[in-house]
Image (cartoon, rainbow, N blue to C red; front, side, top):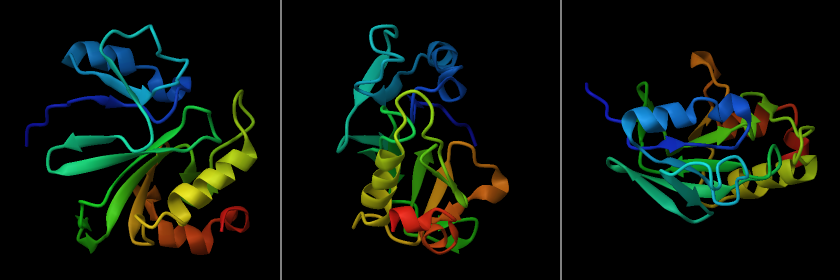
Length: 167
C-alpha cells in the first residue's frame, strides 16, 4: 500500500514532538498543523495551519476532530475520530491521539514551562473522560506509545493510577 502524507499533525510544541516537523514538511511539501497559539511555530514556518478546538481535518475517509487540551503544555491538542470501527480485529468506537496528555497507565508531566497539573486533569476529565463524543471503547494512541501500549478510555478509567484526579 502506498501512503502519501498530507500534513504533519503536532500535539504540542515540545522538542521531542516537533524536532523533525519542518524537515518532513519540506520534504513532502505538506503543511504543519498545530495549535493556533503555539509559540514554537508561529511566524517561523511558511507552510503552516493553526488549529483550534472544533476544527476538523479530513484524512481519506476519516474526519479528525480537534480538542484543545492544555496541561502538559499550553498548546496541547488531541485529535479524535469516530470513523474507525476496527483495529487489529477488535471492534472499536473510534480513536484518539493524545500526545502527552494521557498514556497507558499514566499521564503527561506538568512540571515543564507552561505545564499545569490542574489543567492537565481537567483536560483529561472534560475533553476525554466526560466528552459525550468519546466512549470507553475509543483507543488511545499517546505521544510515546509503543506497539503494546495502546489502551482504551475504558481501561484508563479502571486502571490508570491517576484516575481519582480526572474521574
